[in-house]
Length: 142
Image (cartoon, rainbow, N blue to C red; front, side):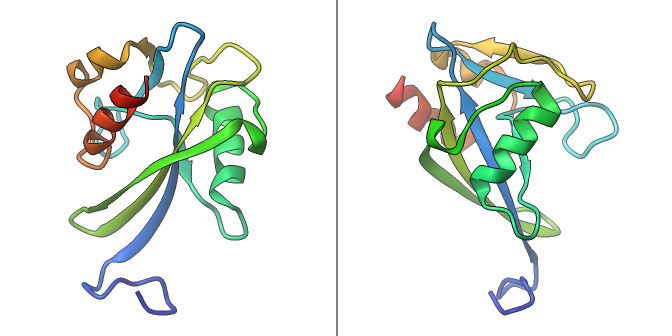
């Protein structure tokens, strides 16, 4: 990647932080991408774009508050793995964090459907290509 944020393949690098929010029953929260967004209807781990000047952890704290109405702290976010996937117009780099300590009851504040899912049922929910390789890692953890 050069200093302008473009990969060697000429695609823009997009940094997105994602979170496996885990409840006391070891279920993981998934959010369904709403109509009108790219990959609408697919299920994903909550999170979002890392804005300039933000760390991935700061972006996750902001996104979890904005999208789900839950609050957490950096100390409650444990880095687990990452996804690196080339889409048609950009390359996605997505660190995945696990969070077991948060306040509030997650709800879709931006029109998205949310659902608690057992690790062995994650493959029952169609996901974007970048999210799929994260499933076995989460299943091994939980």
